[in-house]
Image 1: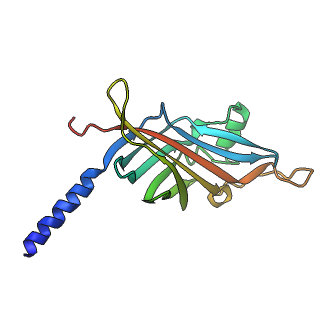
Image 2: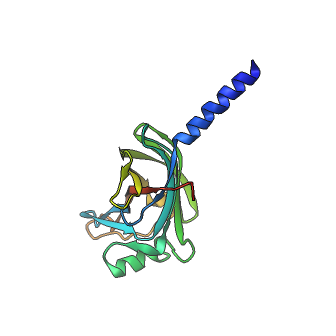
Image 3: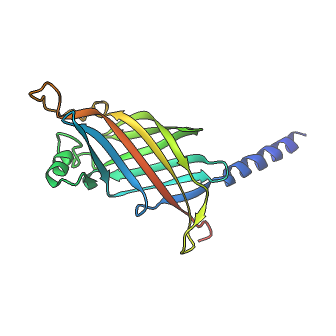
Length: 193
C-alpha cells in the first residue's frame, strides 16, 4: 500500500513539474523600465537596454513557477546622455562597483508576485502586481511565446541610492519612490535539442 502511495505521489509531482515550461526572455520584445519623480513636477522614465532572464510558466493555469533576471546597470537609458552617466556614477548606481542588478521570484499567487530584488549588493523582498498573464502564441517564424507584466514600487534609499539636492522651493530634485515596470515576452525553450 505504501508503494502505491509513493508511486501516486511521484506521478503527481512529475505532472506538476512538467506542467510548467521554460521560456527565455526575448529582449527585443520586452521592457525593463522605471519611473521616478523629477523636481517634484514631472516624472523621468528610463529603461535598461541590456538584460537577460528566464522563467518557468504554465500558460494553462497562468502560474509563474520561477523567474530570474539580470540587468546591466551600464545600459541604463533615460534619453539624456549626461543624466545617464550621472546615474551610472557613485552618486546613484555605482555601476563600476555594482555592474548588475538581479531579480528572483520567491512566489506567485493570483495577481501578486513576491520577488528578491538586488541592487548595489542589497537584497530586499518586493511585492509586484501581476497585471497580465498570456496564453501561448506562435509567431510567424514558428517560435512559441508567452508573456506577462509585473509592476511594483521600491524606495531607492532602501538600496543605498541616496543622492539628492534640496530645491529653493523646498522640494527635492529626485523622488524616493521608484516605479518598476517589467513587460516580459519569452520564447519557449526546446528541450529536445
